Amino acid sequence: MISHDYQFRVTYPDTDRMGTMHHANYVKYYEAARWELFRSIGVPYSSVEEAGVMCPVIRMSFKFIKITKYDELLTVRTTLKAIKGVRIWFEYKLYNEQNELINEAETELAFVGLNDWKPCKAPEFLLKAINDFQQ
Image (cartoon, rainbow, N blue to C red):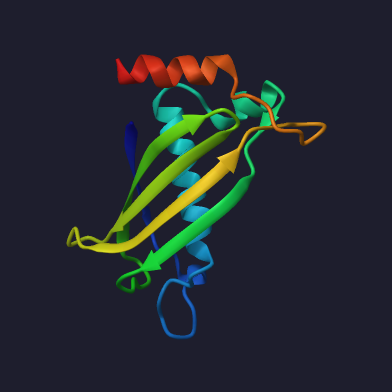
């Protein structure tokens, strides 16, 4: 479907005693990459929430292939794999500066109402932006 590359540097506070990026920090970088993908098609995530919709993560999985250390420049290639009904799926591939794949992940999110947390359809402007981008 749609892919977007997002770059970041591993910061010192994101490393653990072993000198590698702690596994919990992958979540925040993938979240940033996911919303930058939306921004790249003209839909900042804030506009989704302003429309009364949130997107909580309901499933995530990771495959750790290689380690990464402080100050490495990494690239996340985020792909919007599918959007169907009240759910949306993303795939992430994380590359180091040598363009080696070091992590793979997937997330599944749901569209829910901001106030009632009931499942709902994606906002029409988001669906239109996705469709327009694919054209």
